[in-house]
Image 1 (cartoon, rainbow, N blue to C red):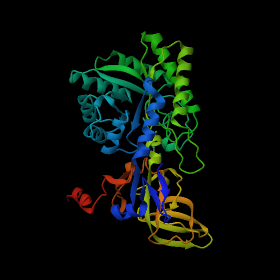
Image 2: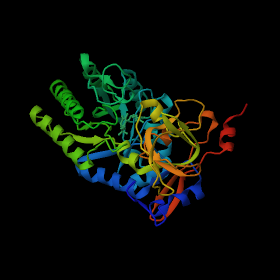
Image 3: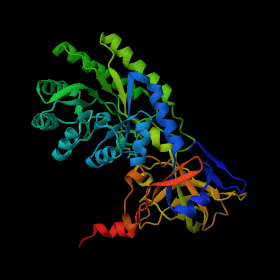
Image 4: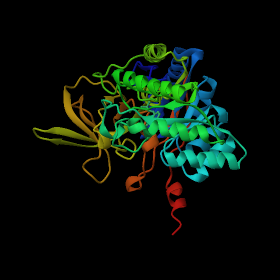
Length: 427
Ligand code: LLP
């Protein structure tokens, strides 16, 4: 978060509020989100792309009604990928025509609801869905604006589970073997569809722009083939999300304006070479907007020094509020935030309270050797894919999200309660 400092007692403050006060008022663990930072990042993406491009925030990274309102106010659009995300977006007043609907297996009911609500675009992900969406749109007397998601065959340099444009995975329609061209042929024939563009998302937590370059080259190649075969120039291309953020000081992400410049230059260069009108570009950053804006505040519980190895520092949450370390071997950092300490650094592993040894939040970290039960520690950069992927494993209650801004803190997603848990258990 941007507005982080320390007060006179050495307590870390965010948005002008000491973390000790946040812990007292809201308990721990808590995701603390810096609203000013979120808005600044959203705005930076918006202004970097200007009026020639659209920014769709990827709601899967983190979605709540407050966030939808901030995005709306900052002029961003929204990418949703389930009925639940759609419902959240609509209930917070995001205009339907600024919503894109994604997913590799949207249900008939979800498609119906999205078209009925008037979403700005549905991103078609399979041959079956082309027919399904066309059919439902026609039955509602509508012509739905759609893009076709293609897989361009790029190996993005990221974890296998979050790379999405290589051939052997479930998303999109392969460019290879003329399948994408065939999908376009079919979509253009159906009355219920207005094909507005081609979509490509190559993966997530990417730093190297070369994957986007190859993707843009191949998408523009398809646009050219479409023009040659059908005499139509599709007006839009979407290059997806996936821009990496700094989880540790080893990562060095680009700024939105650098990314915008690189992407728009690649697309216009490719289009000039193909003698195509440059289409309107859209992008779908999730992590890059919300990731750095929140940290998780934990209270230290038991501490177990293992001679010659490391010290296990247990916190009051764990893999239920941050599955990324266990799932992707993700790296995080940690800091003591409720006080300063002059003690020697000690090699620590921050672990949770769950019943398995893979329940690790921060694999390798240095904490002051005098860290003690009751101290507060913070794990930065947990705004993306932590609350949104949180679980109730071991019936641990999911933490709240508290937004801080200008000296004020308010709950935007409340802490789960045992009543919440038991309400679903109707046996
Ligand atoms: N657009 C599409 C079509 C996507 O599938 C995704 C992410 C995004 C945009 C946003 O990507 P971002 O800018 O946030 O990287 N749970 C994983 C990440 C999964 C990403 C899935 N799709 C993680 O925690 O790293």
